[in-house]
Length: 81
Length: 147
Image 1 (cartoon, each protein chain N blue to C red):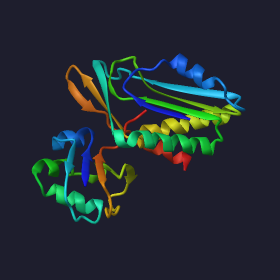
Image 2: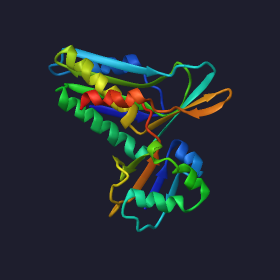
Image 3: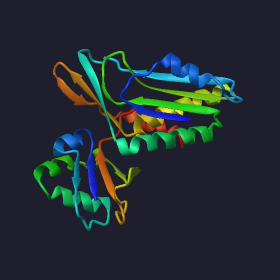
């Protein structure tokens, strides 16, 4: 699965993307796995209320299932327009 | 309908004129353009990051919803990314409808959704450093009126 990071999430983690093998059933479980990796991930995912998630390029909730999913992206609330 | 995500600038007058041409049954065209402004003084540039895989489809879905909801004759969304200077155009929307009320409302709807549901992130580069623009609470509440 590809895990993508944007804006300050990308900066905090220090990479735009990770390719990972995971058995996480939901986005929340994936976040727990990432947090356990290294302090920079812990820092990026410290406050989930400050984050949004997209699953296969569509906005989703943190309890979204990950079965069959190819791409998950984490980012702060969007500021377009 | 046209949705364009690009780093290049665009010619507002050209786009507006092209959009207003050959509209079927539309009596009203509304356009909106967003421009980089220096809110706090000392802004050197605005950097706009986006999610390439998702941006086009997210904007298309928003535009399609506007067309459906206000029975628009046509809709246009152009949104730039990359490094922009003060005074540069960031984006534009245009809507065409039989009557002006629908065209205005649909344009506002597009703007409200672009603000907080299209995967763009703005970063302000100033003399003193760079900071991500925080999402505003009222941008989120602005969406409620369309539910």
